[in-house]
Length: 280
Image 1 (cartoon, rainbow, N blue to C red):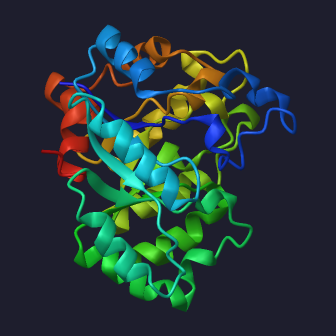
Image 2: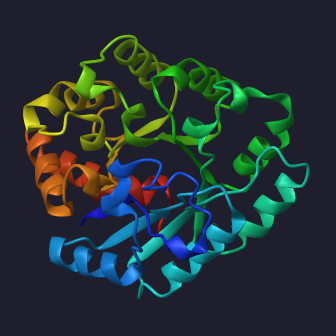
């Protein structure tokens, strides 16, 4: 069983993808187009994907509702949606409760990497929303970079019942050879909290002509720290197309986890995602 624990869909005419501006950033040109559920269904069939988790890509409730429409149209392929709610809003607990009534909603993701204040998630006014996430049984995807790791550790210790997964290994600067303090901070999070981590989004942090060996130091560290019970594979498609196609990243992941046992590989490639997101 392979479950893609992290992919996106978008429709550019919706007009709320603030970051997807190929004029401002020409490097985004390959993905500055529509990626509907039909495209993902074809990829999933070609690569043996049996289920997936669809993750928000912009900070609007309207996009989350659109993602739910896409999930309903997926014929059962998309098993869960990680949406967005303004956690700082006074009505955030009610908004989370409303959203959680949809059986496809599995969690939420604030786009922490795009918020200038790296300590934003620790603000007191977010406490009611975070406690609501816990009470409603929702998950929390942490979209972060290395500068956020210190406050992510604080968040995890402040809310030990918050079910958190760190997206994309916290996006270490692989192309620049960045190692510390990322390596020690990830080890501390793994050792002292119950957070999980996604093996996803790493090729876009590597050099343009990346090779598997360039990624291995980082993935080996994540495997050592989190173990095969707390890692889950995700494609990060279509963002990953900036560096690799779907099949290439899937095959690369198989090489990177190749020394694990068959049972351990099965956990990383699907079973952990099913358990963490409580996919039906």
